[in-house]
Image (cartoon, rainbow over all chains, first blue to last red; front, side):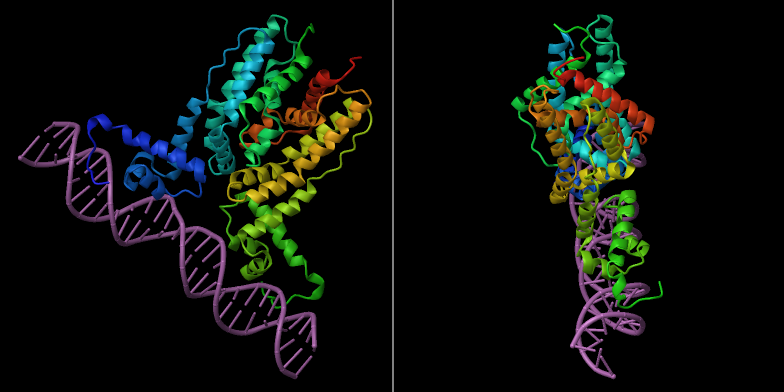
Length: 206
Length: 206
DNA sequence: AATAAATGGTAATATACATTACCGTTTTTT
DNA sequence: AAAAAACGGTAATGTATATTACCATTTATT
């Protein structure tokens, strides 16, 4: 880079975002411990001092990254229509999201580093998975009020449903032993899981 | 340590096991990247050269550890009696095993380091979870032959059952956001999961 | 215009750690 | 008894990298 000096007013946040984007890409590729700050600075066309003055440290940069990521995980969950179709549509969307390579990788890194950064894991969970769980819990409560779902603690139902969706395949994904599932595989899996789940908690069988 | 020199014949394997035991404890506590070989040697009352001559490198030591651990994961699964009682008993044992702090931690480390050691994750999975899955698959196939379970791919059933058992709580455990469940919690959860699962795949309802 | 703020680039600092080398010692082997 | 094997202990080597410091430069602020 040739140009330097204090940046123009219009591009105040540009370099910060560029650092975050670059850091995300590189963290996903190399993990936390195997990525040097120098590599981030070089790829982001930014000096080391800029990163340190904006994020304080490597851990600080990683934290800012997690916080920005989590916000994107609160997808839309339109739970309308019959439980079968609504849950199937939700299941598909959910599986797409949690099996995407970036999300899998970010989870893996977070799991591996969670002892070192307990707060980050908390923030990640509360902004992502927890909201999904709460949304689903409310859905089940509403369906119970209409008599379509048996009266079991809706939070337990939501919990159980989500864990059903993940399958063994998700475990293998996290261990890096399996490729990202195709759309067809996801669709088949969602259908299977929803059917099994509903047979167990539908108050009335047609 | 004062004593040194070539060890007596009786204690040939003692130092090796001592290194492995010590390394396991320390890896579980500090993870892979944050543990120095020197710390292992010191705690195991062994010189650095002994570790390197026996395991070659840090990665080699870690690999030997995983291999030894995996062997302990192939617990006994006596699936006798009715599906309800058999699955509930199995579920309890399974949950106990996968939620134990050591196993959770080992999984976390493996997940975090899997990009660096793809082979280790494979070995871990094939010697532990995979065997459990196969065992369960055979069980479901047998129950199907006796007409107690609906005719669905038994491998899918086993997969779905195991993922039902893990619950959201397991995800939180892996992120370090929850404590190890008590025996009562495990029992309640196993019962709930088995009931939900059987309502969906029992060919006949009493 | 003068000062302050924020940057790029390079280099220096400091540390941590995997790995290797060397020395003296104890036991096995022959 | 002599040679070899395997050990403990310490130190050396080499590398990687997080972090800080310094200088010239560009823009904002007053």
